Each structure stands twice: as structure tokens, then as C-alpha cells.
Image 1: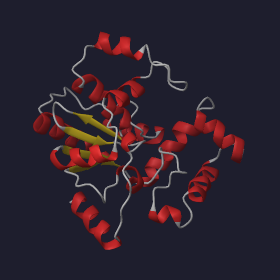
Image 2 (image 1 turned 90 degrees about the horizontal axis):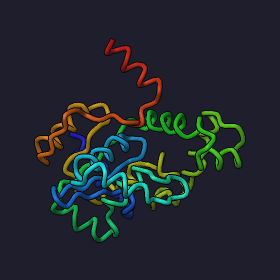
Image 3 (image 1 turned 90 degrees about the vertical axis):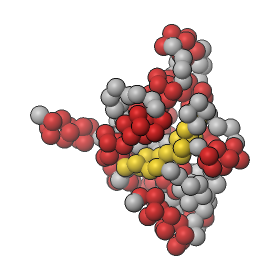
Image 4 (image 1 turned 45 degrees about the horizontal axis):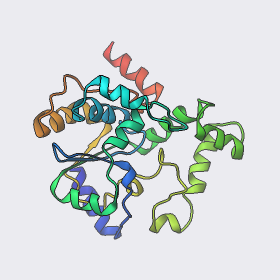
Length: 231
């Protein structure tokens, strides 16, 4: 049981982390609280929130998205969904977690790092790419891993969130505070075809016609492998 393993690990190592409100989305109608780990089915989950949980028509959502003036993501469905379902304070998250369905998703850390590298280091237009090149030069995977280790090194990262680590590869503990909240369900990425219908169809009463995998953070090699298996 994943949650029981997390609980034992947290107790054994006496771990605790401050909550990060930005990473939480809450649907009050279904009393559903979700904490997202970037590069772990985030796009799929936010698409479900936007399309199936917002209760708004496609036309209304598109009109509101058109008004988004975010410098990096103008008209972004990501920004719209995060804002629409945002939780504004740590105290509010703690209160909601006691009575809501609290859910999160994880994947193998190595797969997540590869996914982050392919997604952020192959696109020269991203903020992360430009910042990386400015400090480390032309991207390579060894440089990328060294950067993550360098920013995560030191005593401070052992006792508080490593805020110097980008949210796309920040540790699960630092992101979703698994040792401080009592989660009802934690899925592994490879089990989403099984778990999402249970969470949404059976528990929340939201009928998903299919499990979404829109830009779900899988690396291109993983996607190619999945296509090979299906064929």
C-alpha cells in the first residue's frame, strides 16, 4: 500500500514540509483536493478539472482564457485552470484536507527527470532553457542532472523545501507535503488507466468517457514504447 509506505517513511525519518498552495487544486462541488507534481500527468489532470469539473461551457472557458495576459502563457488553459481551482492559503489546504478526497500522483523519479529534460531542454523558447544556457551553456543530460544535484545539495534542502529547485523536478516531499497531510489516494503514473476511472467515475461520480493523456509528461521514448506494445 503506497500510502502506508509513505506514512511509515515519514514517521521513521520525522519529516515535515511547509505546504505549497500553488500546487493544489480544489473542486468544491465534489469536495476534491488534488496536489500536482509537475511532469506527472499534470496536463491530463488539469484537462479533467477544466472540462469535467468546472461546470462551464467550452465557449465561456475560451472567452475567459482569451483575457489571460500572463507574460509566458497568454491565453493558457493551464493558467486558467490553476487560477480557477486555486487554494489561497496553507491553512485553507489543511482544513480542506481533513474532510475532502485528497489525491495525488507520482512516477519513478528517474522517468520524471528524463521527461523534464526532454520537455524543457529541447525547446529554446522556454524560460527554463534560457536560464540554463545562461549559466551552464549548451544543454546536455549530464549537465542537467548536475544542475539538479547542485541546487539540491546542502543542509537546507534536508529540513525545508528546496525552493531553488524548479517545480518541474522538485522532490515529491517538497511539493505535496506527503508527511504533513493525510492523503486518501496516491496513484502511480503507470496505474492511471486503472485508477482514474475509480477516482472520478466511482468515487466522485464524474463520468470520464476515457482516460486522458494530453501531454502527460511521458518522454518520447516511453510513448514510442507504448505504441509498440499496442501495435
